Length: 214
Figure (cartoon, rainbow, N blue to C red):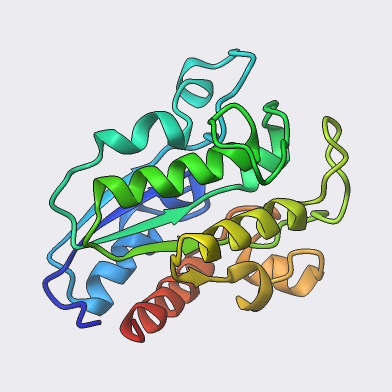
């Protein structure tokens, strides 16, 4: 794919929004714009948000802006759509995990299907790129609500993307960042979750290379 001049919509959470970076220009979306010559980036990242619908609302911004409820409001004229989420569903989402046969936003599994199918219907002729969650510190620890580890959520994202024939950049499997190793955490992800400026540059470079193969 030729990236120069393209417009990209980014649907995401705090990592997309820019948490962990020193300034707006250091967000991976902005770095990608610069190194790839994009004409425009639309950042639809909202910190704390999840793919699935939250059952208990304690924070209006975080709990009422699930991906399934907001993807339709993205601009229609994007050349490429990038979806990056799932870590908050593991970390603090309260929707049931569900089963792969679910198709509603009320379980995680159902929400992934609902989101992917909805994006294809909204952008039927455009590339829709799925990024799996990055590793985060202690992501092998089962979450309190469902007893799932982050890889369980990643596996659903991978399997659903394959079902809908959506290209997957598998950051969980091969990004090269493991925050449980102190040296890597210090270098790229000091809080154990959000990549810093160096981590975001690495992410932008990896995404650029992946998009150019499509």
